[in-house]
Length: 168
Image (cartoon, rainbow, N blue to C red; front, top):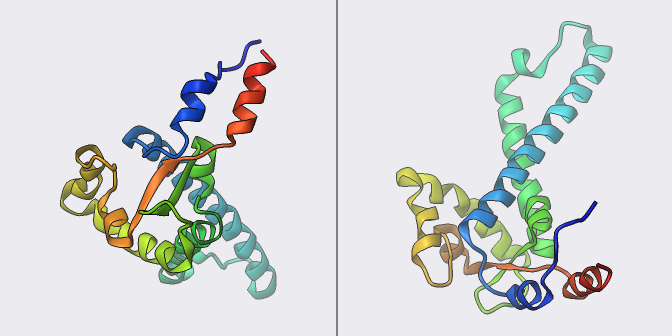
């Protein structure tokens, strides 16, 4: 079975260039699914543990929906902000080969990561106009990127891409 063909000149040459809408959207979808699945699993574990201590009738979704909503909000924030601050990428961004950097190409850092995550919902306002900026701007920065002073670029291990190509 043949895997995807890696074109080293093209793939390595794209490294560091601004990421497009489709790739960014793919990473976003992976992150949304990951956030939901991990939160659901953790919720079931917490429900089980609390039910064991309090009684079998306890469930966060029915007994404490506001706490569950707040927990989901905090979880989504931590899921996005921490890895962006540490490595410049969330799990979804890593899967599709993206990295968030400052607009000058340096590491994103904690403050810019937090501002980017806080500003992210603003890109949804006015029917997603903030995301439309990805298609309109030459540097493909969305509204939350402009606010945080960040950009999203293609980033994968160029050496690994070359080695995969040589192995075919």
